[in-house]
Figure (cartoon, rainbow, N blue to C red):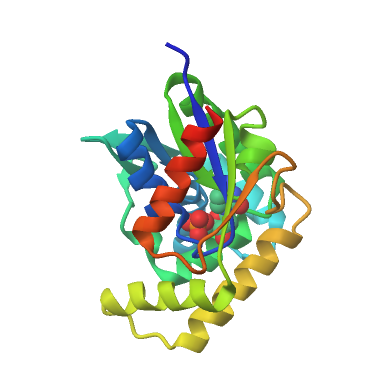
Length: 222
Ligand code: DC
């Protein structure tokens, strides 16, 4: 059976992971959240006091990092040097650390093989920033998922408040804008829509409608 690969890229808080995970369940594909790998590297650097403004120090740290994605009961878990860090990588301070380390070419090249291997062995929906442009340039379907910044920030704010985090809407919006700026202005594999990706804007859609849109686009293109 031919393996299918679907690349979903887009800015912070576009709903990529929840939409992609649900679409993957519906279509019976593996879901792979590549941001988790950058978050694991960010967590290592954060824990070990690595200077986030020093790309060479971050690159050297890669020698001590083994970031791995494993499926446990069909759910993706992320391991850092053998430790399951799936929950810790979601802390807001790790988001910014992930964005910083993801600009370092040595980090990106170290994580590339693992991502491609997953798509070589499984039918997959993979989400990130450079999946359609760099990781899986021959993906069967490419979707660039986005929404207006205020709407993305509102959704992210709601999630954080529901988890009991002490944040303001302004902080969430500023953090989101800063990360989008970093991710799209870096030299190495910046966030951008692949020429052959279809644009999906979920600003006016609720979660269910967004999943329907993505599943519809995938089916249409296969
Ligand atoms: O999707 P996320 O917010 O979990 O990603 C965290 C950071 O990792 C994001 O700010 C940019 C980086 N990233 C990347 O550069 N390339 C990817 N394929 C996925 C994430």
